[in-house]
Amino acid sequence: MAASVEELYETTPQIIELSALNAKNSFIDPELYRKLDVKRGLRDISGKGVLTGLTRISDVRANRLENGELIPTDGELFYRGYNIKDLVKGFTSEGRFGFEEVTYLLLFGELPDEKKLKEFTELLAGYRSLPTSFVRDIIMKAPSRDMMNTLSRSILTLYSYDDKADDTSMPNVLRQCLQLISLFPLLSVYGYQAYRHYHDGKSLYIHSPKPELSTAENILRILRSDKKYTPLEARILDVALVLHMDHGGGNNSTFTTHVVSSTGTDTYSVMAAAIGSLKGPKHGGANIKVVQMIEDMKAKIKDWEDEDEVSRYLLGLLHKEQFDRQGLIYGMGHAVYSFSDPRERIFRYFVEKLAMEKNLEKEFRLYALIERLGPQIIAKERKIYKGVCCNVDFYSGFVYQMLRLPKELFTPIFAIARISGWSAHRLEELAQNGKIIRPAYKPVGEDKPYVPIAERI
Image (cartoon, rainbow, N blue to C red):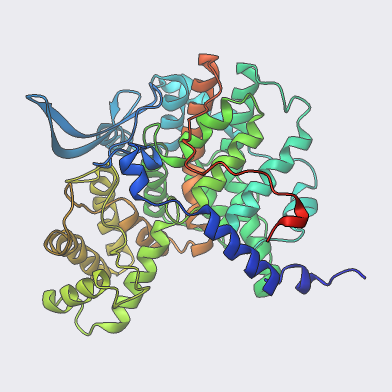
């Protein structure tokens, strides 16, 4: 007799017992990592990443070498040798949207002139169209409550529509990457619209993108029922996309892109793997945690501008007495940056402007207060090997809230930005024609003699 759906997905006593057996025989004493000098997570004892590759695409700098010693400094981020601060200042001061321009830079290693940028923008717009009936047959069927899973499923399904899906020649992979860069916004937003219709009973609307609009403008257009947005909203979403496009070769999803690309597999499988990596709350979901933490704080403290009251709440977070009791102030700290995250510093200026347009200055002042107090409280409470600073996730969730983006799309927006970086790194990996990436794991289990089944206890 076939099992029901509920029975198939139930955690039975048998599964619980087997899980306990697995846990017992999977545990490895953390002390062994130190004793055997194994770089767990590809990071050394100071938290610095182990070098596993070379890249020309982007660079993260957070220290300087002085007399043979690394001295922490304000963080800097470079795309193809250009400081991110200069790039953002350049296209915003000159009145352009930056996503398409910086995508060109990441992919091809140089900034386009006006003619090349116009041609490239038109190329992306031409690819911003899904196969016939794809929305009806794929996106609208069995919509997932998690938009990253929806996005991954859609990407893997597009493999079936591509007659050259397994062709890993550079021109073909570039064509596939450009198409996916163009389609990620549609797949993400349409997936959300399907979910809110079938699960929440909301009205369903599928707006078509406009070729003359930027990526940021089209995201807001196809998301909102009235298709309307302000110029400032579109500009700030565009800046957010640029700031999230790449972050060196060592972040988890980009490293995943290199690892999976090194096997020689197809582009769709590579991007689905990167999406799976980014979905994890330790990687792409941090901004949602920041928003939830702030909402909890706003409900529990009386005066949002009282430094003592805010400090007590932050201290309660570290002592596992507040919010999710994990002992974390979300949005604080970064694996690389000690003194400052350059993306957060750039973003903060635009966040304040948007908060003024939305009459949310009080909320912005609360965020700014936490930004100032958080690192001080962490430094007093915990021994840390480097400084603690506010990271880009701290403000990005607040921005997305002000842009009326649903929480379900926070991480997909990250993916919409990062697909440009993933594409550049995939092409870079294929250009090397190198070996498969295969790190070593040291076995620490014991050898055992075989026991006949009748004699096993």
